[in-house]
Length: 103
Image (tube, rainbow, N blue to C red):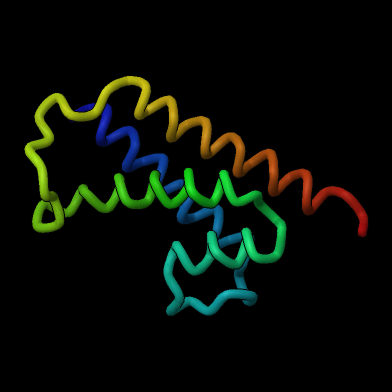
């Protein structure tokens, strides 16, 4: 369950980063997946990263016990946490690539 909590924290960081980078672009009432879709549609991030960020978010939303459909004890493993970290790092890198280069 510690691994799951780590994934949840990474999901929260991804949420905050996407909100910040799209402030004033994607409305506040739109959700996380709306933001990842916008980033992908506008070629700010690639489609593979969008899928990974959405996986992180879906896993993070399992924090809400009423949404959990499986017995989670020992379900999450270190590779799952590493996957979330890689998605966050790739988000950072692709945002940096997009916003630091003149158009």
